[in-house]
Amino acid sequence: MNQAPTLTDRNALTLHRARAVRRPENFLLHEIAVDLQETLGTVNKEFTSPALITAASDVFGPVVPGAHVVEDKSDIDLNAASHDLVVHAGCLHWADDPVGQMVQSRLALIPDGLFLGAMFGGQTLHELRTALAEAETALTGGLSPRVLPMGDVRELGGLLQRAGFALPVADTRTINVTYTCLADLVRDLRGMGESNALAARNRSIAHRELFKLTEHIYRQHFSDPGGRMTATFEVIYLTGWAPDESQPKSLKPGSATTRLADALGVSETSAGEGVTPPKR
Image 1 (cartoon, rainbow, N blue to C red):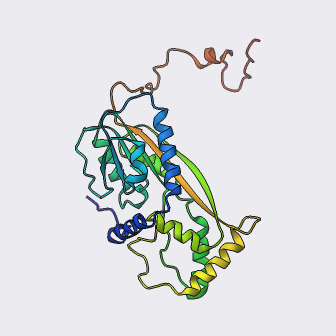
Image 2 (image 1 turned 180 degrees about the horizontal axis):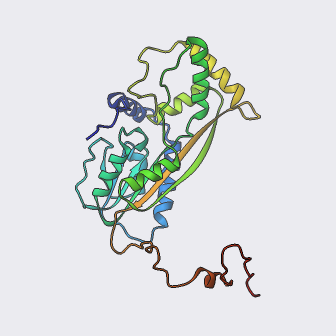
């Protein structure tokens, strides 16, 4: 079995999250929590044994009161077939093996149990990524990993299917935040525990000139009319159900009992002939 490549330095991530607890900047996570709560409110089902996978239980705990809370480790500490709801909140983008995390979540669900995930997607911080790349290339002639690579909504929807979920749905929301300076954006990232924890990151301290040039490029290309720097945060929401016989299934090819022409109210014609418009 192939082992997933190491994307994240888990020790660094743990340190960043501990620092964030001391000086939190969680307004974006609270936005995500509200979205998750609203989604659960639309589900016509009462959950009695929920589980919550998160690194920010203070933010996401109220979304699923009474949930069994666990960390987003590579091996999720949940018993098989023991929960009717699993919420993976705000940390799946750091997983070395997101499919593995989804599979473990599905295995923890009882039949017809719900999986609900929220994570940052590929458009997140694209402005910062571009400005940093241009600045570092100009100063050093090369690049080092500084912003976490993230999946897009179609890729992540496909991962739900690979993980074995029924009725998979992936949706996205874009949140734009403006800042007076780059330091304010960095402060918010640190306050969410989202600083650079890439395993392949450059461990040396970046030169001050890099951030000075990055901010200059950022302002040139990604400022609003008032001169504030715009930062994009894309949040991807994932929904899937543990398979169950009670769930709706698509019909087998050739099993339809009604002709398409009858359903549309038109006359059936052979190829190349015109279609008769419906009678009014």
